[in-house]
Length: 189
Ligand SMILES: Cc1cc2nc3c(=O)[nH]c(=O)nc-3n(C[C@H](O)[C@H](O)[C@H](O)COP(=O)(O)O)c2cc1C
Image 1 (cartoon, protein in one colour):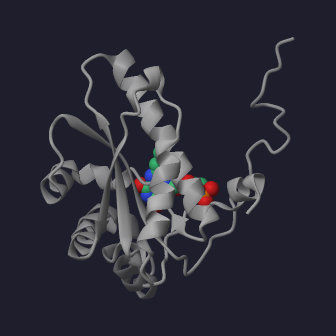
Image 2 (cartoon, rainbow, N blue to C red):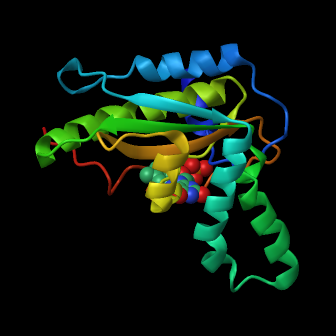
């Protein structure tokens, strides 16, 4: 897929086929992440690749977080909606991005930005592979649970989480708020 096509085609996918993702495809998207820029070339990102029963456990945790959002839904829609969340959208793999914990704000910002650059590389590479993803910070609301489940030490900050799998449903692209870049860009000449 052409580069700009990948950028436009990547969507937040929240429904996946049960098909397994080949390990070589996972390796390629993690390798793409590993080629991101980073402050002082720290390359400080780390990734936890989760599959099997622990994805299910993460889905149960996610259901607890999302339940209040589903309260106002019609009863017939709420069940399937919550089932999908409880299964972590049916994704066979979940990837968790970590940064080294920092005391100083300036250092924390630098490391977080590097990890986010790597994470976006990963999401774009997933799209190029025909895989879906969804950048998520919601699961971090259950931070203590994630740390325990995935043995993440206190010296690491949990930055973001994404399901990875073959999309069962790709949502429509949300329109750009400023498609002609009239408000969002200031040209200083
Ligand atoms: C920092 C960040 C946090 C996000 N957290 C969540 C989340 O917790 N749950 C979720 O379903 N989507 C989450 N999203 C996905 C956004 O909802 C999605 O990117 C946005 O609606 C635009 O859709 P698109 O990604 O298909 O362009 C997050 C995205 C970003 C960048």
